[in-house]
Amino acid sequence: MADTFEIRLVADDTAWDAFVRQAVGGTVFSTSAWLRCAAAATGGQVNRLGCYRNGHLVAGISGLARRRMGLYRLETPELTPYTGLLLAPVAGKGPAKAEAAQHRACTHLLEYLAKHYDRVFLVHAPTIADVRPFTWQGWDAHLRYTYRLPLGDSNALWERVERRTRTAIRKAEKLAYQQRPTRDAALFRRQYEAIYANQADGPPVAAALAERFVAAALEASLAQAYEIASPDGPAAVVVFVEGFDTTYAWAAGADPAYNHTGAISLLYWQYYTTTSHQYFDFVGANMPSIAFFKRGFGCDLVPYYAVEGYKSGWVKRAFGLRQALRG
Image (cartoon, rainbow, N blue to C red; front, side):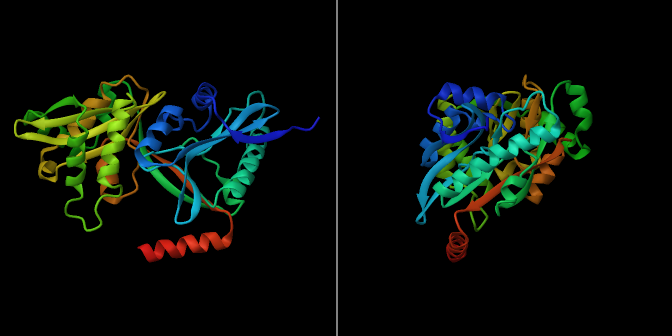
C-alpha cells in the first residue's frame, strides 16, 4: 500500500514538544513555550506545521506567520537562532533510504509552503546539513556560521582558549570584576544600546523589541541573564538560553567603555565552565569583529543554513524591489 502524506498545523503542545526533542534539527527554539514567547514579544501567530506519513509525524517546520508589506509570511522570528526543518530520525535503514524518506517529507512540506505563504524565511539548526530539497525547488540558501564548544573539564577548556583571551580573562579577574545573575531587562537594554551608540545604522534588532523579548524569556524561565560589574558599575550583560544538551549565548549588551577590561570575556568563561550542559553555542560568527572575539575561546566553527523561498518569481522580485527602496 502506498504511503499517505498529510500536512497540517499541530495543535497539541505535548505532541509537538516531544517531536522537537527527538528530531534532527530540534532545539529549544522550536518548542511551544519559546514560540509563544517570540510571538508575544515580536508579533505574529505561531505556526507549527507537521508532515504526517501514514498518521505519524515525520517532519515539521515552525515559525511566526504574519502579513507584512502585503505578503503573508512565515519566518524564524527575530532574536531566535533556529526554527527551521525538523526531521524524525529514520531507524533501521541505511543512509540512502533515510535520505530518501526525509527528502520525501521535505517535498510535501515545501509544496504546502508554496501554496499557503508568499514568502518563507527559515534558519535551520546546524544539524540540518542537507538543504538540497529547498534549493532544488528554487529556494535561496544562505550559508552562516556559529562557534560551538564541547563542555566539560575546565582545564581542557582553558587549553583551547587563545592567549589574547586568556590575558583578557586574567585582567578582569585582577580588576575584581564579579559575575552575578540579574533579571533587569532595562539594564540589558541600556547595555545593548551602548554597543551600537556610535553606529549610524543602530542595532540590528530594535532595542525596545530586544528588551521586550528578554523580559518575556526571563519571565517564562526560558532564559537566565548575568551581568558582570566592577565597583564602578556594570560592564556587560549576557542572556543565556539552556536547551536540551546545549546552552546558547542568546543576547548580549556591553558598555564599550569597559572593552579594555576583559569583563565580558570573564563573564563567558565563568558561565560556561560552571554550566552542566554538554555543549555551548555562541549563536553566530558572521561579522568579522564578533567572530574574532568569539574565536578567542577556542570553539569549533560550525556551518548552518538560512533558506528563503517565494510563492512565485514576481513575488520575489517585488519583495526585492520593496527592500531596495526601503534601504
